[in-house]
Image 1 (cartoon, rainbow, N blue to C red):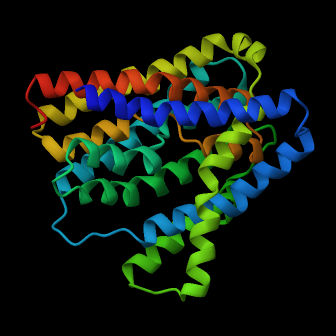
Image 2 (image 1 turned 90 degrees about the vertical axis):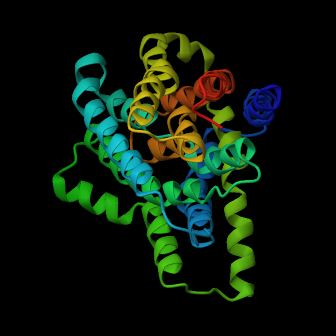
Length: 314
C-alpha cells in the first residue's frame, strides 16, 4: 500500500506545483486578466479538444468488454447528474453556482487519472476496461456539464441555445471525432498526427497553470459552504455510495479498480475553462479543482486500502 500512497502523491504534488506556478505568475504580474482569459480560450477551443480526440482515437480495445461494469458506470454517472440537477438548486443560494456545482461534483478527472491508476494497481493485467469507461463516460460528462452550465449560467438560454451549445462545444466535437476515428479505424498522416498529439499534450499542464492564476484564497473563504459540499460529495459521499453498489452486484478486481478511479478522482481540470467560457462562477470552479485535487491523494489511498484489506481487490 505504500506504493499506492506514493503514486497518489506523485500525481497530486506535481499538479499542485503547476497550480502554484500559475498563482505565482499572477502575483508577480507575469500574466494579467486578459492573458488569462485568452489562455483559457485556447485551452477550451484548441488544446483540450485535441487531447480528447487523440486519447480516444488511440484507445486499444481488443478484448471482450465487461458490460456489467460499463453499464453500471454509465447508469451511475447519469444518476449522479440527475440527482444533482434536482438537489443543487435546493441547496445552493446563488443561481450562478448551480451549474458549476453540478459539474464539479459529477464530473471526474477520469481521463487523466483513470487508466494510469488502474495500471498501477494491476501492472500485469489487462486494464482495457479503464479505456472503455473513458470512451463511455467522457461524452456524458461533457454533454451534461454543458447543459448545466448553459441552463444556470449568467445569461438566459433557451432549449435551442442549449442544443446548439452542446453540438458546438469543442470538447464534444473532439470526443465525437475521436470515437468516429476509433470505430472506423481511420488513420491520420504522421505530418498531422504529430502536431495534434503535441498540441493536445499542452492541455493539462497549461489548464492547471491557468487554474493557479485564477486562484483567490479570500474568495475560497467566501465560498466555504458550497465548496465544502462539493469536495465532500465528490471525494467521499459518491465513492462510498457507488463503490458499495458495485461490490454488492459482484464487481471485483480490475473492474472495481476502474470504478475507484471513476468515483474517487478529483473534479476534472477542464471544468474550470469550461465554466469560464459558458458563464459559470469561474472562481468556484477553480477552487473545486484545486481542493478536490489536493485531498484526492488521501481519499484514493483510503479506498484502495479498505477494498484491498476486505479482499475486493486481488
